[in-house]
Length: 478
Ligand SMILES: [Zn+2]
Image (cartoon, rainbow, N blue to C red):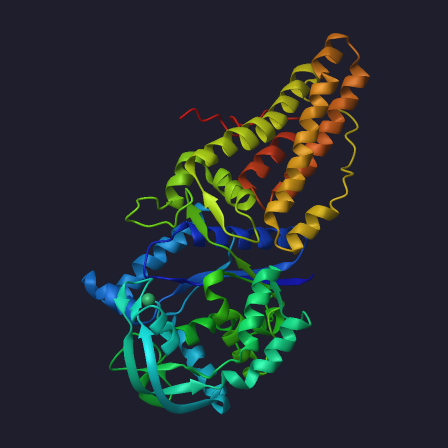
């Protein structure tokens, strides 16, 4: 049995879950389910990133201690995984004692690449990130994302020798040992690396930011939140001694959003190389989601709440819309109107109708007993290649090509006329072909729309067809 290790980024607990993270969870879930269906042993991890000044700030504003605040938001993310039928088998929190201990141990192992130096530069606690003079100047001293002045820092910090790994990372990306998809993102990060990577500050004074993991041997400093958060991908496997780590590392695929590519495609691989560990095989970088063509914001009131959409349309409809209608290699747009159109058209009218009328005819004309259903015979190469390349949109496009083809087949064959003419053998042949094809669609659909696939399989999976329990996707008028 093969192994498959897939991770999402871990969500920062400074706000409730948003649709962008839902998208990432769903993508990762498809890969995990697909690997399981192929017989792989899968570890699928998501979780929450909980340290840093911003969390301390938010907690204070809410009148809570940081841990209380982090607990509440982390639970919301856990709820989201349940609501979206995400099949992760681990959920890591960076405040787990296991992570904290292992992160400190990793720091010690990285020692040869860590030195103390003076950091002079800028910081935005909203991003929990350091900025260069040039970046600050370009924004006239105010962070545009958070509308607050950059903080000028002059502090003694620890640094990590990122610069030492520039060439090895570049080489690994170029020769495909560390595969970054889509190609646009690969080229983007290669350009950054080719300009040269500077050493990075990886700690903050405890007096400025106390909510973090102390630097081993120096209680006056805490580890920079990003630096320890990245370690979650191996601490969760029990690095260094646990059997899971030995079996499952390197990750088969890591999923992230495009805003954190520098952390994952430059800093993280450098840390791994410093530890003498292999790099992940693949990094998939997804795009952002706008709402009705605009960036989502509370002020505009166009924030899409994943919980609400699922409540209204069901989890599979939500998964379908994101998987098929967000371009897998680009940014996408979420519009309520378009969502309804897709729901009524592709789900209710095309998929729902295909399955429902086939089952209804088989039950009405043949008492649900269709003989000699052939094994599925489609060539699924295009579907498999699409999943391998994280082209979720294309994989579903391929499937829907079949759905449409079968609806057309029904319209042309007109089984109701064959039944009227009493041609039982011919009728059986037509329905057997349909059932065989629908069984295959259910299998291929399972990683994408698990609930729907299970309902379809329950109806057509055995020799005696069962009516569908309810309507697959009841038409929404409003
Ligand atoms: Zn900022």
